Length: 135
Image (cartoon, rainbow, N blue to C red; front, side, top):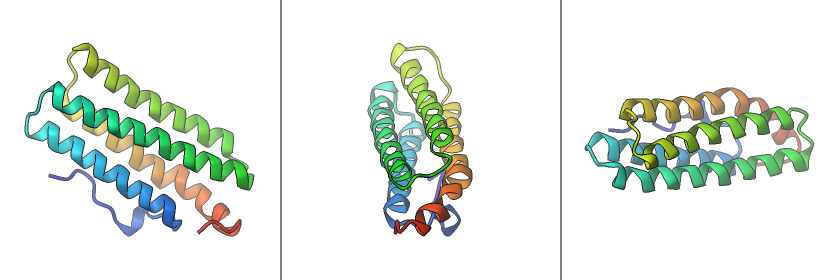
């Protein structure tokens, strides 16, 4: 069962970023699927690692666009990215260390962090980047 579904409300109206956000949603749903069918940490950990890698790559992409175009809130946005990545790294570390972590907690942290980030911070840079010619 998917915990996130791409919809127009999540769009920042920049094709490359929307495509990356859709991939993030696919990875979150893949993680949720592994969790919901009761797969152990050996199955969940690689999916979580793939998600973390993609998050980091996506954030670098956004940060480069913002830096290149002179987005005035670049530093704050980059700091928010670092916080999200740290939360996901923390989940990955906890899972890898064998410490107990609840599946709903893991899914909720990732889902909420990313959707809230898209709906607030990413929507904030959207019009600025579009005005600067980013499509």
